[in-house]
Length: 291
Length: 335
Image (cartoon, rainbow over all chains, first blue to last red; front, side, top):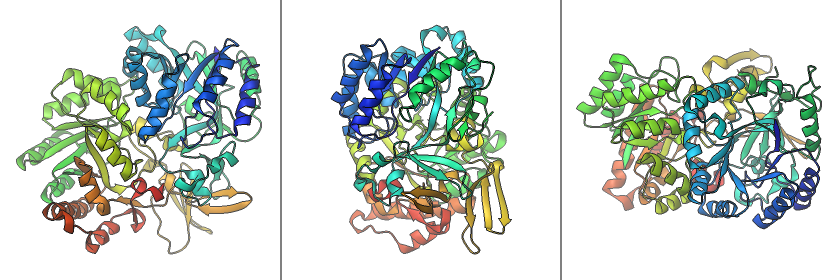
């Protein structure tokens, strides 16, 4: 099983981003996704900065993938995405169908990210013809759903033509909106947001009126209130999942890679510490459940 | 500009036609559409009667097949396509790429509309669906400002359909998993958001509580207007720099109403305005269809003289969530 670091979903100062990836070089991850996927107003990192980090990371033998935005509403946003697709060195992660269209036109191989609606083998078959190399399934899907897709892919003769990846650690990206909920929490209009999300390095927790963590606000993205964690489900991924994805929350996330690796063959449950965790989606129940 | 109205049953469909809808959209009685609710939708004789009624009145019928095909049940979606074609419907509203491919390959002359659930918000995404499946119309997600709608309309020759009125989905449609996070069921997988079977109401000492799969969505004081616990419209607690706030963290119970920007939608050459609400009553369909018919006809008769009648807004306000309406994402300030 390979391990990946998903794209940083939060807005961090440039130096923090650089520190994080400097330390990520030393970890046992096989694949690193880089880039801003949530909001085009977050401009601490310019494309050139990401390319520099990408080159540095790839020199250590890791595969680097440039992740692209999930919600593209303006031509200017599509133009910036084109820069990533045209980078010349790295494959991309498509988080919107527009990226698939543009990558196909430029013959750039791509990973289909979790924000693309791909629920069945026939859709994967078409994406393969466009240049897909890997599929990170939508976060709401289960082991059973993935197994059914893989079974259908075998019938179509395409199972060995791409890798499967599962979002396995971190707050789940659950929704995208035109509205910025972080700005709303600060009583600011989106157009005058002052990119206030930089003050919340892991988003803003939303509690129910009886103190249950329900959501995490991350700009225009709404995430799960509980941290998704499949560290105790790795055995059920054998022969089904090629890449286990961890979503960066802080420098501490880098040590999670080892925790996961050590737990691959373990028969005892890895203790879930530090806040609420969930794994319901993998088990075909409500995402917030822990099984 | 086409006025496209919803129908969850035969009386609603007849009401829409009788009150001036140019086209009506419906779903089949299974999980192939995103309003898969008990007691709703069309099958058998009722479906035949619906097709007949629309044809007799020379209007159009669109069928929504706008959920994503399950890997172990793909034939349910392909049969729905076959069924719709056999009935002679005018257009299919499809979200899933696999279903689009099946429909485009098997029935090259079939008119395909890209469902809002496919979440196409830019020209590159639209090109994908046009080039691969010859899609004729794209239904835009409710995430674009009116400026962005106009910009998109200038840069594509695709027919565009926009939501004009109804319950406001505040997330990019088809890419919201909040419902399955809380209940295990989402619009994409089972065709329903915040499904009714998970809803529980309870009178408590602190007030009336609404819950979704046991998660407290809202608590109402005496005399407060209590709405359906759609999970993105609850009141939650957020702490900002030590300051605790209880508010509608995502959105208030409200409905979209775009009567005010109808001239701008005309200027953007929008092909169709869609009314949300296949789950609503024939009375709702009557009020909304009648009002929108009047507004469109008024604009066409005298574009410069168009203004929103207070009576129209009053009528729409009465059938709106929380009795209030908004321009939603069309208006930058909402964002």
